[in-house]
Image 1 (cartoon, protein in one colour):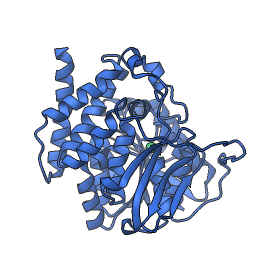
Image 2 (cartoon, helix red, strand yellow):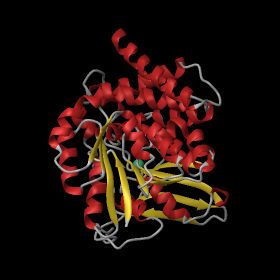
Image 3 (cartoon, protein in one colour):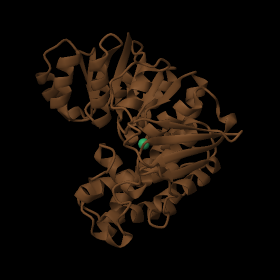
Image 4 (cartoon, protein in one colour):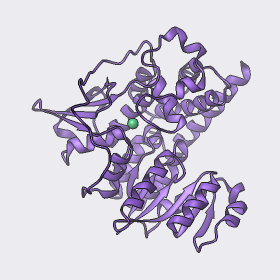
Length: 383
Ligand code: MN3
């Protein structure tokens, strides 16, 4: 029986994790859950899974949550409570499904304790990849990727290290705007952007898929998770979304990681790792897949991808600024405060304004992210 501390239990990934746990009552137990502010769902989940700890990130919701929970779970609140859960000794796996930059401190706390982390949150690895890698290695901790592309890469590598890798191919379906002409981008509504053809995901990541920033962030994520330099990481648009990434080895052979586009596959892989558990998840039916096609991404129409490679080349605090300004700008787009094209305009402006710091500390990363978010808000109050 594995104890799972689940950070971000009410989001799209978190709900899928609980769905897997429900199907394997003899394998997994949920020891802790957390949400930022969705107290009604959090209370329901506490009722069903009876975790030892229930944490609410936003302290203002603590009294209301306490009223709603009748069981004997301990109720915690605030950002520190997430770090506590992340470093809890009774948990065998820390499952991080918090979206955005708030995942950074809990991730570092878990790695410092030598924990195994199932990581669905890509942002902390994007912002602080070099530090995350070092803390992981220094403390003999482990990260099992849950992002589908990186889960597929892990599947392809099957234990081999980066020394045997020639190229990592990260595939992507192309997002909701693949076939829309760029001339229409200015007038896109949030609904049009959120209408993803293949994956059902949270709102932030769906917007990132539309700009292709998501692939850019995944390139940065892969660079640090697998210790492969960016020149060896390529992005391919693969609309059928059957192959989730590929690894070409130095002898020229290639492994492809395939499964139906359903987050529960990488989640189950991560929870069961290094075992493989029997599942009844929807299989790939090759009689229905007539073609597997691949295209190079259109970097003129979607400049975000090049911005991500450039941020890796620049290094230091630049990826953190790219990540945080993107997160803030996407938030503004979702609130209807800026146009779709405003996202990338703002991000490139803030990255260009940033005075980077080389060899940053964790505090430098956090401060650069804070600076980037403030700059985004300044930018729109000027408009
Ligand atoms: Mn992904």
